[in-house]
Amino acid sequence: GNSVTQMEGPVTLSEEAFLTINCTYTATGYPSLFWYVQYPGEGLQLLLKATKADDKGSNKGFEATYRKETTSFHLEKGSVQVSDSAVYFCALKENNDMRFGAGTRLTVKP
Amino acid sequence: DAGVTQSPTHLIKTRGQHVTLRCSPISGHKSVSWYQQVLGQGPQFIFQYYEKEERGRGNFPDRFSARQFPNYSSELNVNALLLGDSALYLCASSLAPTVSSYEQYFGPGTRLTVT
Image 1 (cartoon, rainbow over the protein chains, first blue to last red):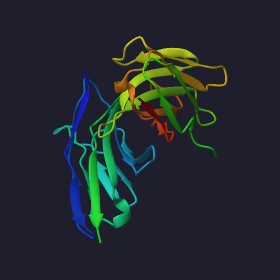
Image 2 (image 1 turned 90 degrees about the vertical axis):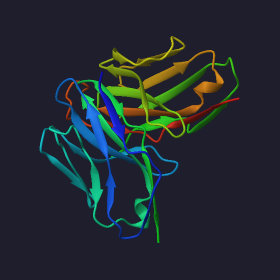
Image 3 (image 1 turned 45 degrees about the horizontal axis):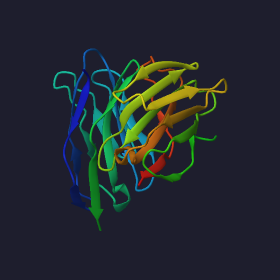
Image 4 (image 1 turned 45 degrees about the vertical axis):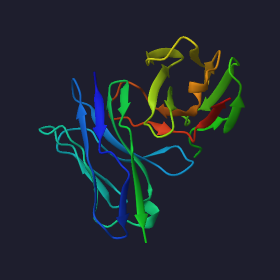
């Protein structure tokens, strides 16, 4: 079946540091890939998405590229802010089947 | 525009009781999905409904059931509550379930605590 594996946390960075959160997936077909963010006490918010190979999703300085050859969708940001502290979830959706990774907690210190 | 709404926000129940959680999707969205998120883990899929019919079911016991109403709102019911049912229950809506590129929009969740 389909599955998502993402980098274990927690990740702690200083403000303005570079962020990478790794995500790899297993799928039987051609899924769409997503990154969701969950701030403390809130539900999930869509951060970015990519629907086919080589697509790059981007939003709020975050970006991720759909790499079919490596089955990856790593999340990156060049300069993190304290306000980026949250839990990040990688997810895939193929037809009506949606799977999430376990989440990576990011803490950014001033 | 109103997003996905869920009620109640928090709920405390005792073992063996029954609970009903409610969800209203974004206007125009006909698909609703339910997820269970245990503390420290990613959401796990429970059910998906589209046009009032069940279109998908995750690996959850029969104590869990759901339905979708003509206005596309939905209820999740859990019978004979166990301590392990304590979690954040998330509802998500989308335009249609079978289009992979259609993202799901999540509500704030209902925090269920079973004592």
